Image (tube, rainbow, N blue to C red; front, side):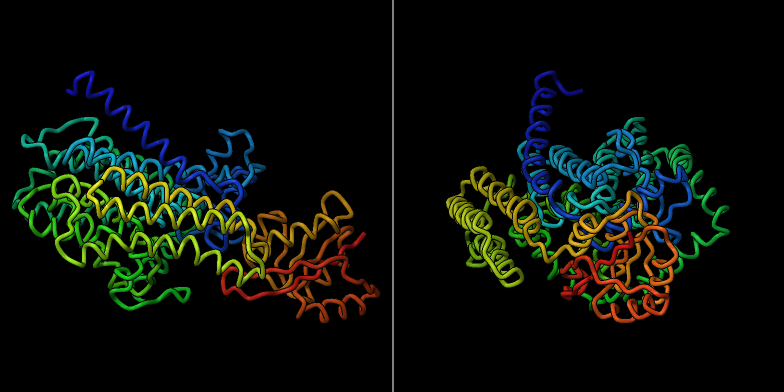
Length: 545
């Protein structure tokens, strides 16, 4: 049992990490508009779940959401109920589970690294995990990946404690955490957690040539507890859907993504290695240092555990046809922990030009984030954001300071400067540039134009030529997404209606209205880019008094 002094130190360190996480992850959460397409689908489905009071058969409008299990919808719905808004909750409420998941990733990274190499390694591991580009993004959008990563690392936290226990005792709290976290992970994203944790356990078991690790997890009672978490909803949705949930989620989604590149997200093997340089920044600066340390310390049991956590699943994902950056997020904490251990036990290395160059990549990343994104903003919007540019220069200066500190072997000060760089960068991106990039958010512009054209309290909303799910969240669940001719019929027959029609479909819509004896001019327009494809388009707004 830890002493009272050690416990106070752990509490202090966890408080530090929570404070760091809030500085890194909170800026922009309430300002960033709803993103298409995944976040909008999750948020609208969660809202409909609360509207209908059906917490089993989740739907987007009339379409069943059978690709993923129910876990994230329940968490988002619970956030709505706890904050008192329910289905009327603002967008940021739906994002709270993602924020919590990201914070837990940092805290469990601390716990694992602390178990391996002490408190200092734990703090570094937590900070490295929290400041990565991918986790910073996932914390701010309401979908599965941040919470999935949290549940996986919670199970891994329990698993490594069992693995490093020389007596391989059956400890209740540890085993309960392992199996219940695994059950929640399955409810969030199906078999992904089983793949990550299963390959980790298989790797260390084959290395040891012993099943003592499995026995220490109380597998019979543990699997029974996990089934109590997972089976009730699986049985219910299987019955309600007539088996369609399993055909869609396992057959078309999981197996389909392995065999074919779904939704134009195909890429060759090796893609994730290149992608991780950007999505795991600034952690990726230390990748070569961590790999060299792991190679030289392969006999260390903790190093082997981290290897089997990260590498086998990574290789599986490299071989699948469908590739998205968020798929490799559950492996990121393993690299953060390994890097922290390497920095504490081996220190910053300067003995080759390669290591010195990788530290300079701190400046390269700072330049891309600080200056490059401001240039992209100017290209897309046609003007400079003065605040964004000022913050971009601050990002660049902080990255230069971090680089110089790393070269001088001032590790803790360098990590602090790196954290400041990340905080400023994410504040600039999510609280300044993206909210000010008005052309990015066509659904927001549509909602503004509709508010100005509204002639009654509850008009029938109709949208033609724009099918992003964010417009349903902004205009209401009963919004009809349809073609020009059907839209004209609905518009004509409704006592009060607003139609939002893509410019290219406007002629057909107005001609059909004229045939029915009505001739209306648009009362407003909304212009913006469809984020999926970045195509600039104009929507015309028609209102029926």
